[in-house]
Image 1 (cartoon, rainbow, N blue to C red):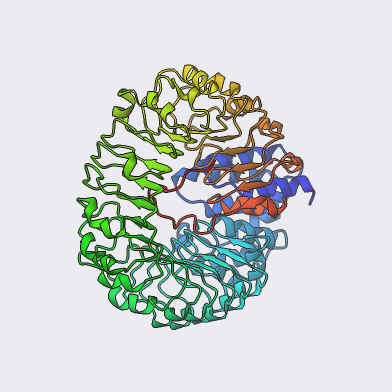
Image 2 (cartoon, helix red, strand yellow):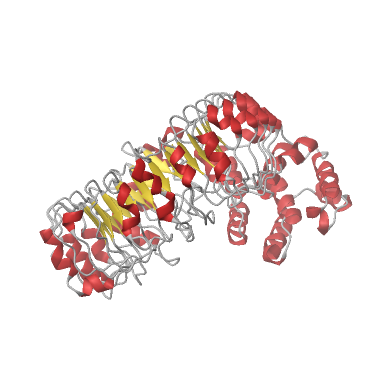
Length: 633
């Protein structure tokens, strides 16, 4: 088969929606080698049921009758099958065996097509011997990374253990109920992310993965962990968020290197007993207990004396003052980071024993109207979504980051050290002349005005250190004028316009020649991508471009090839299924991020150097809380 035919076959395999399939069929109709597609035309007629695919089935049938030999057509009319075979395993196997028995049908191609169309029922294809299991698994490998995202797969075959060079196993958002015992053979694994599956238990063979450092199991159905979990001596991160845990394994006290533990959204977990095991983990520095319906003081939390970061957010009935009462006797001596969003905190006085050493404090979504307590070491404060109307810079002399969106704050005091300011949705601050206060912040580097109504950005040109501006979700009557104000900010290098609802892409976007990092995520569905990329070609310094979460972006326009200076491109959670081959000639491009893209993209990406691509382990497992660090600069 010619390379052109193979390329078109791959395009057909990567198409799933009715519109995409109809376009693929039109391409087939125009080719000079239609017989190569006989198998796929059979698949389209048989496997795509439902009214949505009626036009696809009819077009495939017409094309098949036009190009298929009479012998093959007569044979197919004798093959027994019914509409309900999709839910009838015996009927599916019988039908496929008939097809694969015919010498004119390519078994390998049929197997691949069915694998894509059904989301990858590995065991079914092993039984019908249409593909070897290892050959199927290789379809989801990119170098030493195995990536399987958002499929109906319930089990993985034992042959997974034969991929001995894997270092990263990313199998998020499937329907996997159990991991194979052979996973213990993957002794080079360093990261497993099985978030958003249906796991009910873990195989005891995990004890053999001695190099495993990160294990992410968020959003599953785990009740307990096997005792063998304690033998993962190199494990540093363990995420068990949103499971049904009742008690942790006693062997976790043997985890000498465990640093991060997320137990959020496990309301039935016995914390008293669990903390007895965890207190013997000498390196445990960060623990998350969000959304656990905690309604009694966690007094034995003080036993974890090595903790530097505690997250107790979204426990509105938690007695905060009683939980940290032991701090008066010297407990929590290493605590630097404390998250108390949406708790029972009514007064900062409850934190008085901790105030002297806290560096990061989040009290968002509480009922505080002010903070009258001194925090001499505090670097980051998040008081968003509180009725706070005043802050005193003398009580927080070292503050570098302030998140005060959706508050009653109308005045920002003179803070010589403040580098990051988020006033998202705080229209009262803007109306009270908030932008005029910014020159009093000489160290300000990052300003976030998300979800605000803007008309102009005066005085920002006076902020000589300002290099990053976030206008995500902002509304503006005249974006052309606003972009002209942005152009006047001489030191600006990063601009975020995620989720802006402009009616037409402003042409002055092309004037921002000093911008090095541009975020254009979650743009409207009707975005004119060709026009957008043409404007981007006028930005000679553009190095970092994020287009994540744009499902309407199906392919990169040709103008994207003109961005010769681009070094980092984020295409996560987009509709892109392939990249132009010419893009591989870009000598400056270093990384392309592809979290959450269709698996078809991964298979296509094997034609590029896999060193180009970046995955974020546990991308689906992180909390949706307000960031306590500045966004990417």
